Image (tube, rainbow, N blue to C red; front, side, top):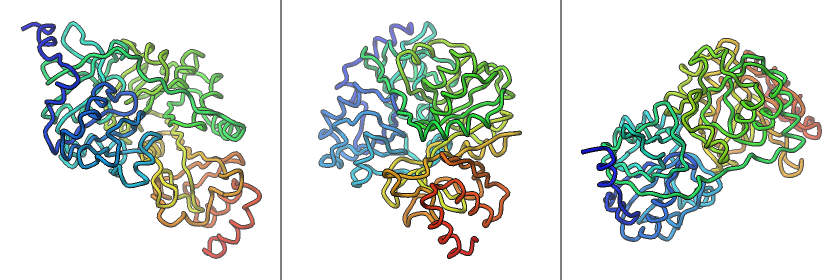
Length: 431
């Protein structure tokens, strides 16, 4: 049977694709725009047909009807990381949360600690050899492909065919549906004066020839905007976005000086514009790989001068980061922050940056605190932190004593809160 004949034999309607499901199934869905909207809309419409279906994903970008708490006994969302679509449900308890580092999700799937009965994923059109590319989210989805009873693809001509370990063969596919709507575009975050100030501090510390991991957010993008004059930068990251595309166009990114996979950009998911997705199409300089490859601290650290740039919500005087909750209230998730902080620490001449505005709520609340708010989910521990950057400067903590750390952190706090933090440090015997 030819690949095209096999393709046609597996092509079904979205409703018929749901026949692959069984009550109690755990469905794995890729990160962000890798989620298949036609399949998940069909599941939403027919959710009352099922019992105890769970849909697991690291970052939902659309709020589908199956998020409805009234029907959670039928279909429930399971978040590895909360975003705008899932945050309210996570805070109310309607959406459950699986704590994890990004690099560990494929491993937990392989070991059966996270079930993977079914895969629902966006995919590129099939090539002449029968392969589809899961270019928008190789992440943990490829591990699920190897374990799942059923693989259901939403094939869309707007999904790029990318290289790397992100391919699924038609012989592995249980059913497929076709769609043609544009891939969801996600714009760059807003950048204000505070983000620009923080970005400049970080950009000034990035050397020519460095390899970058850039998280999502206004501050990481503010750093990117100030790197256009650098030379021979490389990319080994989890997310490829429009900020990186801008640096490629400026000539700052060449990947020539990378010491691990020289000449190649490496990422595990894409989040950006149509222009970005078109750039990914059969681009020999880009490879999309699962997160246990991109985010493995040992592998990422093979890049000399690895620079990791990640944001946090709150940090204490010892350097403990609460990057994923507001006190006990969930806000996001661990993602790849710990993975890349550790990778940069292991890299020769590597630098790990944690960035944050010094205050919140119009300068009425300090984000640098003596101790984290009770119930805060600790993301990156004190032993891993190196550079912390606010709009007031840079604190370098690695190798410093507890008292030295407190002094460094107070120096980059908002001036209005430094006396209060000094008193708090004294109460903790840190000064």
